Image 1 (spheres, rainbow, N blue to C red):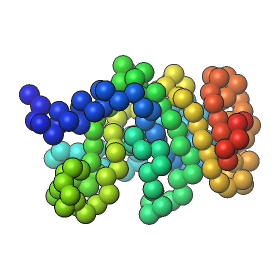
Image 2: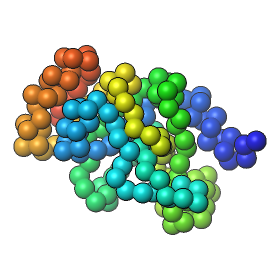
Image 3: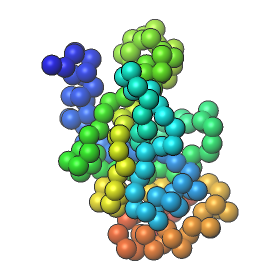
Image 4: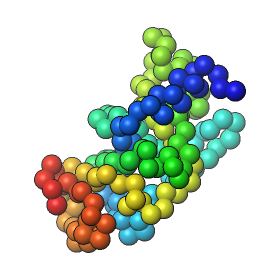
Length: 168
């Protein structure tokens, strides 16, 4: 049986038809489009009483990640409804699981930001089936190195790709 706060997380996820977003950089994007797979991260993250590799997703496209260790200039938009038919999408709060925060997201005493995070604990294969859009903002040097691959991926799977707010 679900606890009340789990019910709130789950019912929100089930009732919301908005996309989920994965933020990454153009170097990782090259590997993603080459394999048509979104892989779990290389770092272990706290989950319950264990450490696991996961794919981190957010419901907030504009989530500020400027304090992150690298420039995340690419947003991969995923169709949550299609994704949940093949993968378990789990509501997640990194700060709670890592014990950096003791207050849940609805508590006014919370000190850490709420990331609107969801996770998947396995690789997402045949990624094109779930993709709504790939949006890249920023460094032209990085973009130019994978431009042809982006064009091929777009044409092969009919994926919407935007570079600096312009359709590819």
